[in-house]
Image (tube, rainbow, N blue to C red; front, top):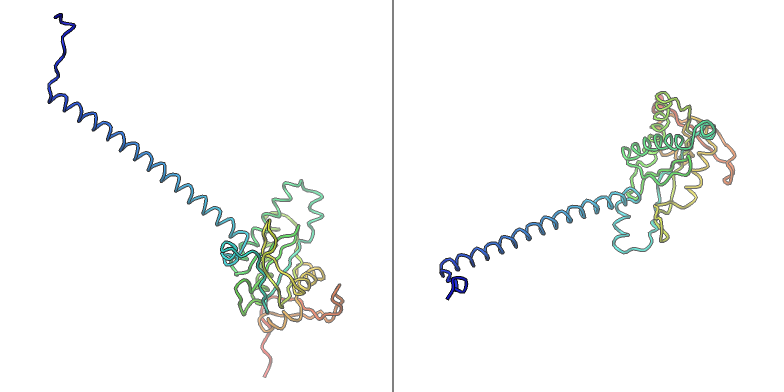
Length: 266
């Protein structure tokens, strides 16, 4: 028998060692694949958690947390009645003139700067931003969580908004003013519809607050008699007497000045 035809006899110990090495290599490969799979899973879970957090934060930027939880719980529409809230409208005076001498992109940046400052103030005072309408800004105090000092914090924010815009004018030369109106009373608040959810308010209180703004005075906070009664003693109030208000008729209104009213003499 030639050498090439000879059957190679492998030592059993060596064969056993070879099988063990093969098994060990296979096991190591499986362990490595498992580790890589786990790493990919952990990475995917981390990314999913980050995206979930972003989605939650975006939702909370649109809706109050309590309203968001109710919608996620399956509630289709929300309409809650509140017996006592204060609604604030602010409109930028001089914006039309500014828009005639600024490109659109720059104009939007001005609005973003101003409204972002107002948003920070709303968070600080605990007011609920409702929406912006063009160059108008709307917030409310006393919802979705009721609070007894709703009128006071609404007026304090109004004065703060006026001062903040004055600072921005000095810093950036905007040359803008605010006309601010506040009214207190009952509203219905909630979310309706199926698309582009917004937490909104309805009722005569909203209309009256809007009229306080439109019939107000530049760089002043104009309030209804209802609001004035709730903040009397906390701010100086200057009566405007009885004025004719569109859609409302005759109303007694006030301008809020800085500082509290002096105590009555004995």
